[in-house]
Image (tube, rainbow, N blue to C red; front, side):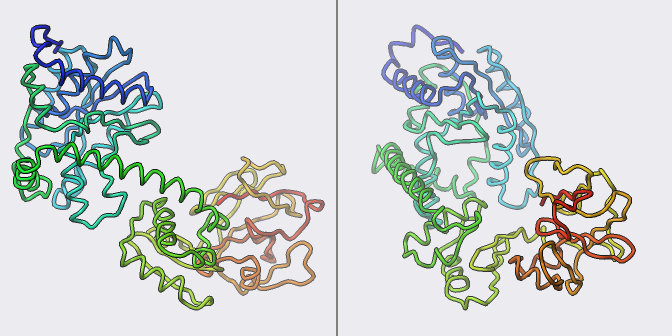
Length: 456
């Protein structure tokens, strides 16, 4: 819907402030294309209207996407409404259909996750995603974070701009209350849809919206805007904290893993903050109780102990002073190879579990990140991949005596839980171990007649 010149003067202050907020966000992001997440509700329709009015002078390409969850009987009607609104404004429009995997469990969170996944698939590095979150959303979010006992990251709430899917996510309306957006919609004669599920106060956010926010706003009319300012200050503190943690974390890493011997020397709160920062790499958000348990199990136990914690799908283990995070679901997939081994054919790449192998005449590996070992074997020899059998003996190039694989594992500092699934290569009728991928070969490079390339 184009701007109505007759209404322009009556809405000038609010309209100007909204337009300026949008332009400021767009200038900071500096993306030539914009994708608006369009639900058809008040806030997204207001943002659609603002963007459509600014695109010619600001010089950006605008498109919109609606995510169809299929949760409401009116879902198809909302699609048709959004399509009509975008068509009237000559904005490209598309629909993304998603389906909840378990409608009985945390519908809000599932819908949100699926929505952002669908939108992420539509983006490229030159396209910014915009959502129409406003100051009331911010207030609701921070109240929910208080209910959960969140720390700085949770309390900093909704960010006005953040990295997302290789580009950036913008929320230019965070400084404006829902009442201001409603006023703009009235002044501009905008239509929008209303989701009936918003009336269901069994959802925490709806309960706050219907019963708590009206009381707060009646007593403190500017609370949405002042909360938004507080969140900006918290986000600045969070950004600075993460910058400092990014500087400190490498100091407690060894081989890109957390060095518990270094971490234990740090005092709290730095120790816990470093832990949280490290675990965020794995999308883990430990509670205060879990961090206390971690300290007792990993930092206070005897050095030769082999502690184990299970956090969701992750196993936490310690070996040689390092913390290992293992995908617990993947651990059950590490089945040993058949008793007769797996045949390794010449000049063919073979994948087994998370390993890749290639036996080649050439010393050149398939890619730079592959590990290569020389073999004093012609390409007609029969090679097999085996696991387990750690009592078998192996003599590596340069060593005077053979040792059992279990002893080599100790020398190579292979964690105990990996030894049973560690592959080794045997050759010929004598079934002699000729190489342990990633570690050692039976011969030197000068003796090589072929090469074993591997990658894990």
